[in-house]
Each structure stands twice: as structure tokens, then as C-alpha cells.
Amino acid sequence: MTLSEEDYIKAIYHLGKGENSIVSTNEVAEQMSTKPSSVTDMVKKLSDKGVANYKKYKGVCLTEYGLKVALTLVRKHRLWEVFLVEKLNFAWDEVHEVAEQLEHIKSEKLTDSLDKLLGFPQVDPHGDPIPSKNGEFKKAVKKLLNEIPVGTSGTCVGVRDSSAPFLKFLDKNKIALGDTILVLEKEEFDGSLYIQVKGEDIRISDQIAANLYLKITE
Amino acid sequence: MTLSEEDYIKAIYHLGKGENSIVSTNEVAEQMSTKPSSVTDMVKKLSDKGVANYKKYKGVCLTEYGLKVALTLVRKHRLWEVFLVEKLNFAWDEVHEVAEQLEHIKSEKLTDSLDKLLGFPQVDPHGDPIPSKNGEFKKAVKKLLNEIPVGTSGTCVGVRDSSAPFLKFLDKNKIALGDTILVLEKEEFDGSLYIQVKGEDIRISDQIAANLYLKITE
DNA sequence: ACAAATATTTAGATTTGTCTAAAATTTGAT
DNA sequence: ATCAAATTTTAGACAAATCTAAATATTTGT
Image 1 (cartoon, rainbow over the protein chains, first blue to last red):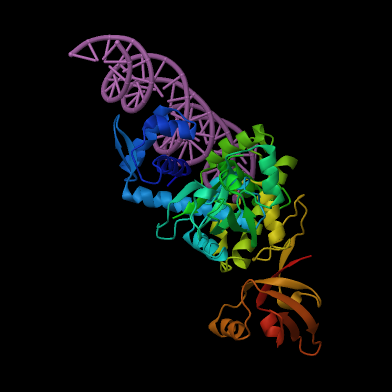
Image 2 (tube, chains in turn cyan, orange, brown, blue):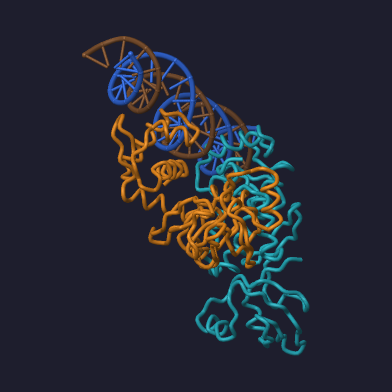
């Protein structure tokens, strides 16, 4: 599989929302910052290779084999992201570009050893799940913290309110993007929550919880 | 710099023995398993880009800038080799192919963080020196163990006698390729040596020492 | 010094991945 | 149901990196 082919496979996979739905030539072109005509050429080739199913004017999706290739790429990408954050102290938002390169390295042994070194992580620094060696993985959904049931945990991935006071609050309570948050208890009376962040238990109000997005794997 | 250009730069560098001597079109073609005509085309391009000096029919060498690029590639290659052996438990002889891919990853931050994670190693698993961030590094030479002065250490890189009895001896004394050996003491009477391998001090005869190659950085 | 052998370059073709411009197909609004 | 707009494909061109075969330059042996 060439570098370019792999990039197309990943684009088709991601546009298909992991459900391998059919995606259009234009969508792929948009996603990849290329031209629709280039996409047509490439999906023909991928189809010939048994990686994708393509029908003229009807769009393209991955074959079973193509899906496997895509999942391997996603697995490698996310493992490298964990490596960069955990072992090399990269920041949450610095890892993507480098992981885009690293995901193309071809060595099953490397991927699996990396997985082991990192302790077989389930999610990447963005809270997205990491496929296992045989391609299984859970879906992740993005929810507001106040919609998450007691006992489940997720990765902090964004804010709904990006005003200075709210961000300052997060900072003061040492809540940062990429942190794992566990919902310990919910107060029925006012909707406030006890949560665990970085080993510490803190209480936050419903208004706070309604403005913080977590990604959880269900 | 494209992948292909980087491969040519590395080939010119290595054929020039690190001294940046002039190398011939044919030598480069041989080294890269490609055809001389392809080399001609590429070195013209590298010359236009200010990476190499090329004179028709006279051969090619790197410019100051090209040398810098080459040293960065060598640095990355060897750091990744250390990573694979030290952190992912790859064997001595499994690392080269993967490092060939990893050396092309473009991220200064990645390279320097990796260097730090590994504790700023001086040599790779083959005993070859790792250039520092600014391109300085010592030369390595290959010598028989019995020619190495007391107090210096090197990396075990090969054997002169590859007979079963000799290899069995090495195995029994837990001496393997890639090990670091320190010469502790030399016995004048019979030329036998006290050496340190993997933290243990052992005594070996002159005949043994005369059949084991070490790489030392002087 | 010069012919033969070797090394190197040139010319032209090929493959991969891309593009533009034009043609074909599909979609959607009335 | 029709036709204009949007989407998609085709045709032809291009750049990068490679190759083969032929031409040219250099080196070597006597």
C-alpha cells in the first residue's frame, strides 16, 4: 500500500463515520484538499486492488479488507499519539501532524511492541478509542459532562462556553483538555457533581458540567 | 526534501566515509540498487538545490548544507535504533529496516524528545556514534578486543572466528552482539584479559580476545 | 599513445499521482 | 416532467522518479 493510497483509505474510512457508509467523490476531495478528478482516479485503483467498492457516479466505500487496512492505520495513529503525549511529553494539540507521518511506518512488530510499552491503552489523548490488534474497538461519543451517568469516565475534549471566566475556572480546578474525568456522584437536589480528575475528587456545579464536553466509549 | 532525495543524500554521505569525499555515479547506483542513469538525474537535482556538488563525469560530494542534512538523518536513524532495542526490546539485528523508515519522520521536537527519553545516548546498538543536535560526533573504529587499551570500552559487533566452539563459548559467557565490553585489566604474562560485560567481570584468554570485534569511539 | 574496456550521460519511455478543462450524469426546483 | 445546477467522470497534460538503449567521455593496458 503506498502512502497516498493509505491516505485515501483513511479519508474514506473517516468520512464513512466508521460505519463504512458510502461517501462521494467530492467529499473525499474536500477532506483531502485535492480535486475530484484525482479522487476518481484513485478510487478506481483502490477498487481494482480490492480495497474499495466503487460505482461510477454512485460513490465509494471500503471492502472488508480495506476496512482492516483503515483500522490498522487508525490503530497506529492513535498509539503514536499516546506515545508522544505519555512518553515524550508532547501537548495534547501537538501530536496530530507527527502521528500522520508515523502511522505509515510498516512493522507489525513495532506497532504491537509500542502497544505493550504503553500498557495497551484504550483511548488516545483526544479520547478516541484505539482499535485492538484484530480490529475491534468501541465507538466513542461526545457528550456534555452533565449527561454522563455516574460511574462512567471520559476524556475532556472541549468546551461549550469559551468565555474567560469559564476557562479560568477550569484552570483553577486543574481541568485541562485531554484529562480523564470520572463521575463519582450526582446530587439530585441541584444537579451538582462529584468528579475525579487527576486523582483528586472535586465538586462542580451543574452549570459547569453543562459546558464541558467529554468523549466517552460506551 | 523528498524521501528519495534523503536516501540519495544518505548514500553519498556513507560512501564518502563520513569525510565527504567525492563518490562516483556507479558507486551510488550500486549502493542504492538503482541504475547509474537515475543517479545522474538525481545528483543534478541535488546540485541545483544546493545540497550536493556535482561535476559531469567527475563524481559528487555533499555541500556543507547537504552534510548537515545527512547528519540529521544519521542522528535520527541511530536514535530510533536505540529506541527499538532499549524500549521495545527489538533484537540487535531487527532494527535497521524499521529505522530506515523512521529516519524520514520530520519533527525536530520528536527527535530531540526521543534523544532525551533515551538519556542522550552516544552510540547506537551497532556501536556507531550518534551525532549531537548540532551535528558533532566522534568517529568509530572496529578493532579486535585484544588490541584495545585497558580502560576503554566498546560495543561487540562481530566475530573473526565463527566456528561453533567459539560461538558456544561466547554464549556460555553471556557475550552477545550489541553488548558493551569494558577492558579492566590485561595480564602481561599470557595476554589474558579481565573484562566487564553486562555488569559482570570475567576473564578471557588472548585467543578469545583475538577473535572478537568491538567498535570503539575514540 | 591509442584502442579496448569501463564509466557516465543523454534521449526517450514508463509509472504514479496530480491537475485543468470539457463532457457526461445526477439532482432538485418548479 | 423538464431543465438548470451541481456533481462526477473523461481526456489530455505535467512533474517526479525511475528505466532501457544508445551515445559520449574517461581510464587502462600495452
